[in-house]
Length: 555
Image (cartoon, rainbow, N blue to C red; front, side, top):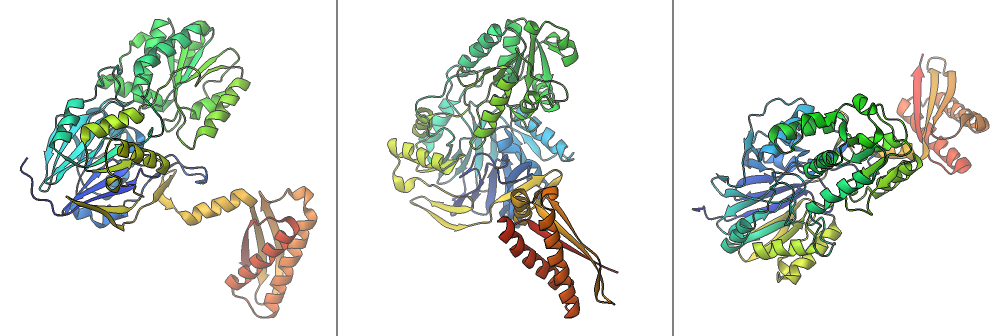
């Protein structure tokens, strides 16, 4: 490759480090900026009411004229869930494989974006040339087809992002890892490797997909009643295993959930899932069959496996409920931070009378490589500098230790935080500065309109509730005309706290009378006085601090 001499190479993570999901990485070669992935993250517990979280791209917006392209490694929401937001703000080409772009199109439709002219299809043999760099791809094995790694070639060597990967010697379908191309990249010279750290703490090798198909089929064979299987909507290998198991055991399959149905229809159309039309039936048709001949496939609203299953266990699902004698198979593992949700749902399923297949049988394997596979990737790539990404900080640290074991010096291992700007030269690497990074919160149709102040208010409301104080004043005659009326929500049970609320009302009236008498009729001052006095009084009486919202009306 005839590449222009690169004088300034930088790597920045805007997401995907110190967390699971929200993957987004920026590679700068001189004046050109390239993006790898733009994912989402499911909200943490303290993000009350938030649906999903995407990366803050303020830095890219500020440098929009320099951004040349975005490359997508695969179609999981953790990697493509924020593409719509980037495309709203930046007019750049988006490169991805056939399946990845098909899933992006579905995502764009959700947000009313019909323009798909910037989407560019690539495969593992594609090569794209820019003024400062050339970009090539290599096939990886993951729990979704059409996964690739990305190599950005510069005059100093390649900047390689592996995407999510494992080395499965007996993979589902033909999702074979392109080991020879990885080795060639290593021989030609990898300047910096960014590699998947999700399973960096797990020893050995991750189990093969071939094991899962047998386990799912056996579990279905041993079930006397209906079988309900919950999977990640984007785990095409697992969906195919369920379809195959239903055929092998003479069961008809019903699909619950619009999201799951759309995913399967699209995958069948593109040839990534193979199913006979007569196998799939509606829930109404399934209910007429003997329970021994019935199987059901489900997932959650955002593709996570437990959303619908939880409602089925509580008997609050619109279409289907778990009943005594059902076998429920959870063919997924909890994402870090969501273990409690899994545990509670499994408990509810047992209470509903179900036989739960989870954990004790290998009905799911990870799509991410364990320690020995991560070492293999390092040995194939032989990078000069190594940057563990796609994982919590402890996973990055564990991955860094693996890199040391295979001979990479500690000084050349970069444990970065979101927003760190890492400048890479042939014989030097250093974190030079930080750029704006963080979270854009999506709540319903609102993108970014919920910030830290709104979350703080929601947190306060969830802890001690709210007290609304309504007072009507006559400015002319300097007197309280009506109220104070006190409305409590989530603070105290009104019927058992009448005296407390009466005393509170008296306190508010005395403050209002005094302000009127002293000619302090600025509403902001009056509200502040009411809030401070009530806050102190209620804390003395209850040791709680509800949000106090004074409403002053004038006649």
